Length: 138
Image 1 (cartoon, one colour):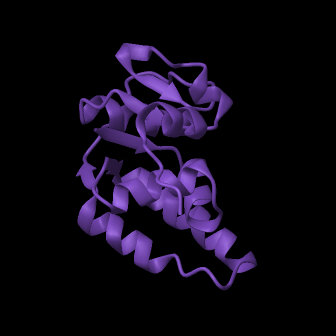
Image 2 (spheres, helix red, strand yellow; image 1 turned 180 degrees about the horizontal axis):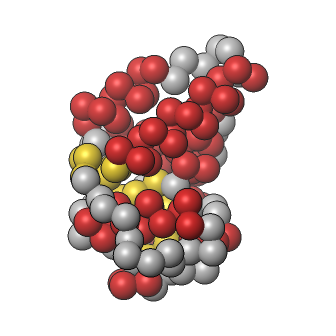
Image 3 (cartoon, rainbow, N blue to C red; image 1 turned 90 degrees about the horizontal axis):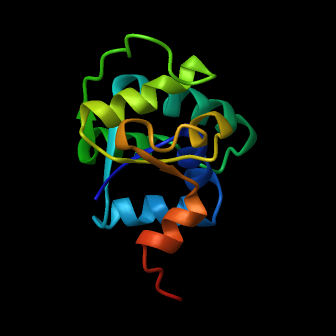
């Protein structure tokens, strides 16, 4: 299953526990395929570096390097017209459309409102985990 992760989900998965962490773990374990564009990867890096200043014990470099090697990278052109209330979020829709991916995981209200756009399901991390992942208890 291919997924696009909004930056808030990616960052939460790297720096904290909970559903976003389980989603990233599932990707690292090969259970889901992460799809990114250059613009998404740059945003992950930029936002991650800002948060890393507050959480110096977290090294973002290994996960960014893993994405560069293991994620599916697509060249997604800008959408012809802004779709999202926050046009900066259009890059996630463009990535999903280009990769023919039908699933974006996000906690962003602007994106969540667009669930169903061109057949793309946009769901919260908890719902994705409950619907698609089997979490093994430790």
